[in-house]
Amino acid sequence: SDDGQHVVIRPLAYVKEAELARYAEIRNFPIIPCDLCGSQENLKRKEVKALLQEWDTRYPGSGDSMFAALSKVIPSHLLDRQLFDFQAFRNPES
Amino acid sequence: SDDGQHVVIRPLAYVKEAELARYAEIRNFPIIPCDLCGSQENLKRKEVKALLQEWDTRYPGSGDSMFAALSKVIPSHLLDRQLFDFQAFRNPES
Image (cartoon, rainbow over all chains, first blue to last red):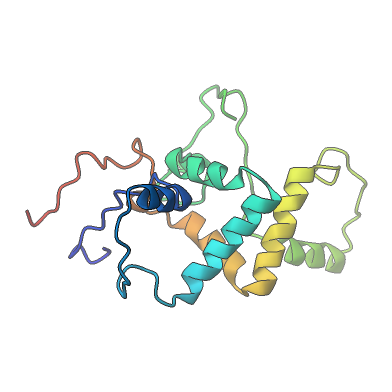
């Protein structure tokens, strides 16, 4: 976390929720009700999820594209001056 | 560009289109028809623009949030192994 107190790991970040749900079904994993795991009310999270699903329905594959983009960041295409030194950048030809 | 042949600059990246349009009006800039400047048909660009506007209407401020996020990239929150060495990461406390 930002204060350095906790390390967040996301071991299932690469697994689609639908695939995970299906796997849990196949393996008959017991599904326990859970107050801590994100199934509780969280409006923003749900809104963003719904929006991403909507995009992917309208533009099939856009979810995969966004995911791929997170794995292949091109700092010079972003706007973070810490991450890419725009100021010092010079055309290699000049 | 990716092949290193061209350097793309975006001097107006920080200016909202609506503000720029208003400024051009105020200053009476001549508006010329243009085939090169993105006003031509470009379905993807238009779609993404419409979607971003839709988000910003539904969730006011989301456009600004996304823009701010581009300026403050947190590599450990993304999935790029080149940008952040997840493998080598250790909890500083351990």
